[in-house]
Length: 366
Image (tube, rainbow, N blue to C red):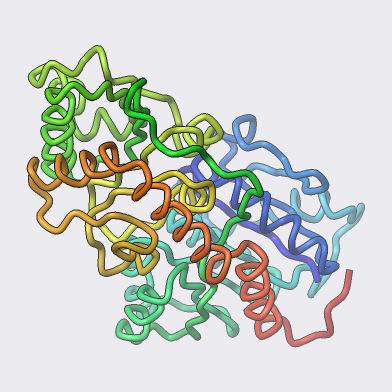
């Protein structure tokens, strides 16, 4: 089976760890995979061990879409080893990850006669799925839902495509993190998009109150999301500037983040991030807003959920973890166990392969 993974710019930069996991898992099952990312970020999207990466142009006038898809097809064919025009049926599946990749992916699937898988992992994906009713689609289309709550929401959109639950998963490391030690600095990573500045500000006020108790918190925030949310001026007003570090592409370069003590998610916008799953798997305590579209957030099982997203609510939640290391360690162990049982990378790959099998009527081939 030949597969093209088309990521848009945001997904390519934030989720290249997931792309690498998918590529390895698909290759283990005999698929030949090529990754396509916007040309401007090719150099910032690390290639997999055996997966070539090509560039494409996601943006342009509508009447140029077919030509852009055609050029991408030529690059994909070359990456797969075709030295001449490959003819019909040379590509089995086009899998688009990120809504900005959907238009070119749709056109490429038409040109190649391939099945089309569209990844849905946020509110933008739900809106785009609703719009599919007004789109001339290829014959075979599947909507891959990153979460069962999103799958249920997709069924209500009446999108003209099959809905497939392919819950995002991660690897669970063998080593565990030690409990939080409030005698030294407590590192806190902030996972946000900047879409809900008020929620981010309430979280910052709550953490300022924890610092006022004498806890030495150090905060790490994605630079782009932090600018959108106005983190810097709010931190200045709260006297937190010396405690806040803005980090470039926090989700993309996540290894340092997975060594923090606490991950906080102050927004409830239905957006899924594999970084949160990686944190749970790695024993990082998670404190988050309740979000009906993110079923991995289970109070007392995978995370401590903030009932009222007020400064007091955030202060109480984080203060509770810092003051009760044993409780925090128990929560981290529970989250690791839940990920191991429900959200493994192998489970995600199996679900994706199931979708591909329904999209590709021909027998799988290399």
